[in-house]
Every structure is written in C-alpha cells, then in structure tokens.
Length: 530
Image 1 (cartoon, rainbow, N blue to C red):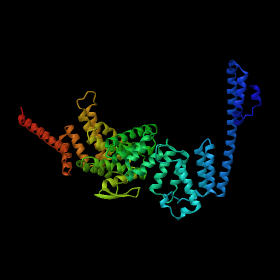
Image 2 (spheres, rainbow, N blue to C red):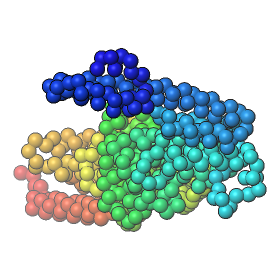
Image 3 (cartoon, rainbow, N blue to C red):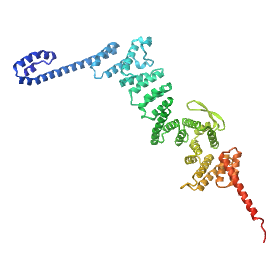
Image 4 (cartoon, rainbow, N blue to C red):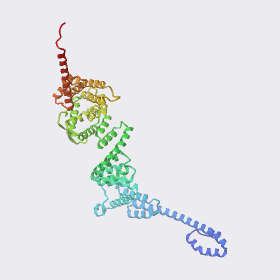
C-alpha cells in the first residue's frame, strides 16, 4: 500500500486508472483482517488527492480571475465595452463578492464615459429613446445605469446592494432640471442606501404628501416614528389629510412630549421652542403655544419669531367664541394705546401685514399693531398681559395672577398691566373669601387698590381704570366713590353686567344709608336748652 502511495502521481485520472489493479493485487495478497485494516489508508489517499486537486483548482481559478479582470480593465480603457462586459461575466463566478465586482465595473463604465458631467441624462424605456441614445457613449452610460438598477431595485422585497442605491440616489438628485420625479427617485434610493436614517424618509414624505400620496408617506415614515419629533409631526399631517383626526392628535401629542423633554434639557434653544409651540398650536393648544413663546421671548425677537407669534395669536382668536373676539381685540387695543410707542395701525379697522415669507395678509388693525409692538421689543410684557387677562376671563384666576405678575415685572409702570392685575386680585379675593388658609381679604384688596391708583395717576380719565376702582370701592363699601367711578364708566359706554350690577348695588346701599341717616335725624328731633 505504501509502495502504491509513494509511487502514485496525485492526479485524478491516474488515481482512477490505478484503482482496479490496486484492488485486485490487494485482494489476492491480504486476508480479510488485513483487507479491512487497509481501507483507512485508501480513504486517506483519496482525501489527499481531493485536497491537492482542490488546491490546484483554486490556484487556477485565482489566476483566471486575475487574467479576466486584467482583460476587462484593458477593454474598458480601449472603449471595447462589449468585451469588457464579456470578461466581467467570466470573472463573476470566480469572485468572492460578485455584487461588489459588478458595482465597481458599472461605476468604472459610468466614469470613463463622463457620466458625472451628463447631468441631463435620464434613463428612458427603449420605446422612448431618442437619437442621442444611439451614440456609443450614451449607450455605455445607459448600460452602466441599468446594471446599477439591477443591483439596487427600488421596489420589491429585496433591499438590493446599498452602495448601488447610494450611487443612484446621487444620480437622480443631480439631474437638471430637477423635477418631482427625479427627486422622488433619488430619495427612494437614498432611503434604501441608509435605512437607519430618518432624514431621507422625512424628505420623501414632505415631497409626496402635497401630491396626494398620504398613505405612502405614512408607510415611509412609520419605521422611523421613534427617531424624531419631526417624523411624528409629518405623520400627523398625513393622518389629518386622511381624515384620521384621532391618530393625528395622538401623533402631535407624542411629538410635543419628545420636544418638551428636549427643551427641558436645553431651555435656551429658541428654534426648539418655536418648533414645540407650532406643535402645541397644531394639537389644538394655541394658548400653551403662545405661553411657551412668551417664556422664551427675547427683548427684541426676530421677524420670523414675531410672525410666528402673530400666527399663533390669530389662530387662537379664531378658535374662541365669536362673542369673545371683540373684547379680546379691545383689550389688545387698550394695552397698546398706553405703550411707549403706540403703533400706527392701532385705530384702523383692518390693515395689511407683509410676513417674512413675502406673503401679504389682511388682519384687524390691533393685530397688525401687535406685530409692530413685538418688533419694538414690547412682547415681554404684552404677551403675559394678554394671556393673563384671557385666563382671568376664563376663571383661571391663580394662573392669571402669575401671568400678570410677570407682565408687571417687565412693565411696572404700564397702567393696563396694573389695572388688570388689580381686577384679577379682586376677583381672586372674592373667590377665596371664607376658604380655610386663604390670605386675608383686606390685604389682597388693599394691594389691588394700590395698583389701580397707580394706573389712574397715569390715566385719570380712562373708563376701564375708573370701573376697576369703582368695583373695588363697592367691595370696601365706599358707595359715593363707587357711584362716581361706575357712572363715569357707564357714561363712556363701558357697561358690562358686572359693572351695572355693582352700580345698582352702590346706589341702593347709599340710598339705604341716607334713609337711615334721615330717619335717625327725625327721631332725635330739635335740640332744646335746659
């Protein structure tokens, strides 16, 4: 056996030819036990032949791969693209990574033919090819792109080769002139090239939603809904377009929670604050959006920030009952009337406003004046004043007092701020009267009286301020002062139900006091000397 193995030439043909003679001789010269013991040696010999043969094949295939790749590169350089692709076909079965080799070939074919400079080139069906497609250069470019498309299909279950997706994304996004079709194709490939990033999905959704593809946008965004608040906002828009208001609201609330967490970690981030305020307004919470902007309002906001505040305020005004719109605008008009620089549009019924986007809108004069005041840096006191006054009108007195105190801290000498805080403190004292642990009623009313007197020192003939002092005088049982101030307010057409009721009470109480005094005088009679 050893002699046979020693003299055996390790080739498959020789091995097979020698097997019959070996087995015949081995059979004749061995017993059964010796025969069985020789079987492992035969198997060992067969394994050695196989390994040697495989090694030879690998060496041969490696040499072939190098040879085919060299021929392919030479054919590409010489412009014989058909021969280059033929050698590529021979090379692929010998490669460890056929996709990478095919991608490199297509990229090389594209570059050699100046593909990066052909920004107007498009891949068209055969039936739509023009005469330019007959040139060898264009044909080679189209062939390179076709190979890339085979490597990276946009549709279907297979994800494709990511570098090819990245190549096609760059190709479509650099087409001139750019169209919705080229942008969509480019973003679809970009999304496949890096499926872990949310930005391509968001860009694609923003592009196709205005075209009516709302469900397709949701399909693209859903895998990334946990990645960023912007994704949730875009999903909310899609749900709203599909008349799914409940799902839209849920997405907006989830986005607001994400943004709120981010803002808590970076309270000075103004772009983040603006984004959260927009989400709150879209979620049906315009007052919260306005309050958020007021908290981070710089002394002089940018024009875009002023535009955003006006949009929020207009949204809120349009959402409240119609009966409350006129009083809100009157409150705004009164506040701006006593500002340091009363805006020019304050007394106009309507006025036009040009936004930073270039859009021109027609709004009530006080709102346009509000925009001008914001640009002058008066938003720090104006926003808390408006929000606090609105909260007071809605019965949210604790919140209203805090907001109006913020306004007072920013504008301590503004009469409307002082007056509205005085009015709200009076209402709060009425609400707290008789409650355990409540502040002493007289202390709150005294502070309210000081505030309204401060306002009247600046504007002694303002009906709103006189009305506030009149109501406070009723609470302090100063009937004469109450009647004097409340009659002045009613004469100036400031006649709310509360003012009229307070005036009626003051008149009745004073009449009762006079009647009691007259009766006391008549009972005592004339005095006589002893």
